[in-house]
Image (cartoon, rainbow, N blue to C red):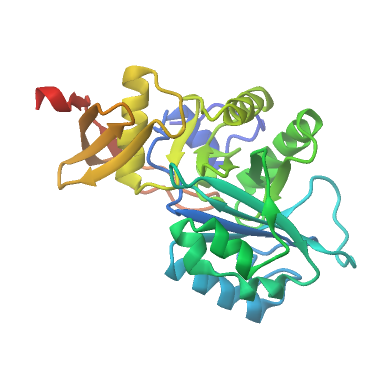
Length: 313
C-alpha cells in the first residue's frame, strides 16, 4: 500500500503509514505513574538525557533511578529558537498521575543536578508533602501543562509534525506548552502528554490540542486521539478508553483500572459501577514501521472487546 500524504506532505514518514492503516491509538501511551521533566536548552540527541548540554553522567544516572520507581524522566524546552549555551535557571515540573493523588509541582533550579535531592520514591507514590520537603524550590502549579515531542534526532515525524503544533498551540496557550525530547509512539505524531493527569494524545491538530487542554482545565479529557493515561499498563489503557467510549465518560478521575487477569481488565467507576473488558493482542496487518527509517514488520497491537457490566458478569 502506498500511503497518502499526512499533514506534513511527506508520504515516507512512519506516521503516514499509521494514519493510512488506521492503527488504533488506545494502549500506546508510555507507562509511568509520575513524571519529572527539566528544562535543558540547546540541541538534543536521540538519547537526550545523555546527549544534550545536560551533564551526561547526571542525566544517565538520574534517568536510571527514575526508571527503577516507574517515574518518567525527560527534557523540555520552551517554544522557539534555542541558544546552544545559556546562563539561566532551569524550569522543573514534577507530576503525580494517580487518580485522587493527581498533582503538579513546578519551580526553577540553578543546576539540573539539584534534582538528585528529589525524593523519587515519594514522587512515585504520590506523596506531595514529602516531595516538597525534598526539593523546596518546587511549588504547586494550578494549571495543566502540555509536552509535545519535537526531537527530530529521535524520529523525523516528531520534528516535522511536532514543531508546528508547538508553535500554534503556544500562541493559544502561552506559558503552558513545552517541547519534549521523547514521549514514545513516533508514528502517532504529533503526540503530546498533558500533565499532571498523564493523558497522552496522538495525531493532534492545534484545534484538538486546545480542546484537550481546555478539558484538562475542567478535570476532563476528550476521546479524540486518546492513547491512554500513563498511570495504567498498556492493557489497562486500552480497557479504560473502551469504557470511556462505551459510556461517554470524560472525567479524568472517574475511572480506575482495579484488576488485570489473563483475558480481562476490570475498570471501576467512582459511582461503584464496574466493567470487565476483554483485551487481546493481535498481529497488525499489513506490516508497518514503528519509526521513520525502519523496516516494516508485523507488530502486535492491543484490542478491546465489548466491556461487560459487572452486574451482568
